[in-house]
Image (cartoon, rainbow, N blue to C red; front, side):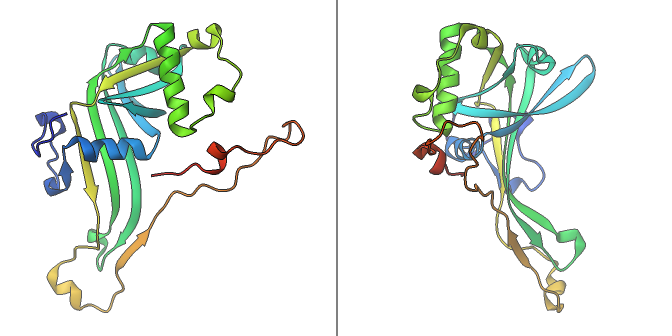
Amino acid sequence: MDQSKSAPSERVRVKRAHERGKYDAQSIHAILDATPLAHVGYTIGEQPFVTPTLQWREGDRVYWHGSSASRALKSSEAAEVCLTVTLMDGFVMARSAFHHSVNYRSVMVLGTAEKISDPDEKELRLKNFVEGLFPGRWDMLRPVTGKEIKATTVLSMSVDEASAKIRTGPPIDDEEDYALPIWSGVIPVKSQLLAPEPDPRNLEGLTPPGHVTGITLG
């Protein structure tokens, strides 16, 4: 992706609060890598749909997967889609209702979804997905079967046409409102990972491995 500060296309140019827009690969990749949760927008006939999914990035491509029977994934193959990722970092409490906001980091990627058809490549991409979240887990698992690979669809697209939008900092009030006796500021929001809960059917004596106890979120 071009490291310049200009938008790669008019479709992804940030227009509202344009000063929050970022188009460099470092900013976009960092947000994609910070959370696996994404939403993908696509169209069936004339009806738009948005569905949640898990995504992961490899280089300048973003990947997502689901059931081969999924209507959403079938409709996305070779189609124009919009993939978004958002992290909420805080509630911004202003001195007026109008200026309340949130601090956030978001990315929007537009492009054509490409289906991974080769079974070996599909298995590799799924391995990269699991290993990206839980390093070392794939090799300790029961090997994936051909039936499972066939039942899974993996799609990808380039992140060349993408933009990030980021808000940070305190509220921005009308100048005259700063004299009002109203508390304002930011209530930070953070995703939290809690202690792992074992499957009650685990074999006796098993303890969670390091990739379970040591996982972090961006």
